[in-house]
Image (cartoon, rainbow over all chains, first blue to last red; front, side, top):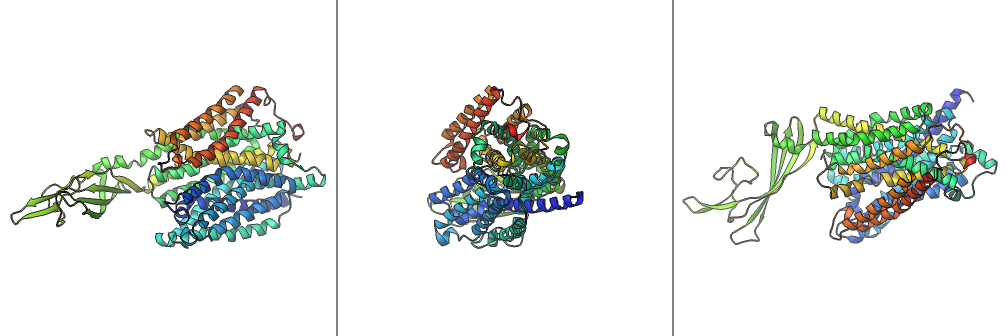
Length: 549
Length: 74
């Protein structure tokens, strides 16, 4: 086969493998991204059983089921072949995703709704656990030895691109309709689930036309396939110790870097820095879009200089840079400091909701004054919401007693006697209270937005450093007959469990050590540092040219 | 260094269990107050910690001083 034919053949193999893997990631992500809407539809508040099922859906699918899927499908892939196994994972993922979009809400079918959604979410986790190992193995077993890193890095782009497509589809659907139409029972939130079946259908068609991995075919023809890949992978010390090394020396750190640079960054910007929803997603989309080519860069580089140090340097840079980067986010969008700087602060609009609690009829009546102010500060915009109980006082004006509502005490521009008071007949003196204002919906100026995009881009480039070479690295560690099993489990433990634990442990740390808004970063920093040390001490940088053994 | 990894495993497990004891709260509303996530995480993490101990033991025994050059050695 000449060079051109080889490249054309590899192109088809990469396209067919990557497309399916990308779609599987997309299917998995849309559930998480639409979690709030799904919770309202299927897991109503106040119902303890539904809340339990919701927790299980969120945690069990990500943590427990992915490694289990890795074991189930890894074993299948080593026994019956790569092609049919990761065709099966695609069918399971696509089917379960489409069906989630068809399940009627809790209001229509009661407890059956959350039960069905939980079951389908678990099937998603199972399928994802089987997909990656198959796709990476399949591509690697076709690739020439000196280009294995480059060709498998195409598979590595799919997780991030799947996130990109999921963000893009959800934002597009949201922009086409009102918030009410999107969140309705059979509203726009279901469309991303339905769209999936079209994508999956195309991918299944393409994968059906693929041939089996040549290395596996050769192995099978020689009668050397494994009859018990689980026992061979984890029951024999020689291979098991390599599984442990792969986990603790590589994918554990890779998983936390991957998760922190993308998901934790998005969540931090939304919930801590309070960036407005659409701008938050835009920042992430640009960061992902501009960083994705680096998967190929580092995959190719790993073919020339080895896999180990590229991955480990990515982890080390994460350890060094995470706190400064996240601190910069907080510093540049510090709304409380903006509010203190009265000179550059301008109020754009103000709207209020006034509620009167007339249940207390004696000398006091509480009037709750909800206020939303829209502000701009040096071109940045944000919303302030405050809630004050107004002082209400009777004043004798010659013709009799008249009640006036004082402006809220937090509004220092008004005072007693100001004609801006509002009259509420029939009220008497009340108490006053002052709630702390809540800031949200921060929209950054273009310059500051691009600075944030740059910082997110840096973190995603670190993701490409740790993730780009890892498929080739894992493939080269294990023999063909147990490769799918041996590489899938550490991969999904490193990514599903260590990576998936990032938000939970970050929240735990934040709730325990409340004075430091960045305390949650110590988990990924600690895990990445530990993995760096283990990998530096024990991993080999040698590229295994021979994987057909 | 093998001893370090062998000790780290039970220390990290203790950290998780003590975190669970401190944070599980029937009146709490956050995910860290619910027992189910803690149960799942501890259930999943315990074999991983055991794996870290085994890894530490292999390191201590010098099993990683020389990595296999080919699959025939596995």
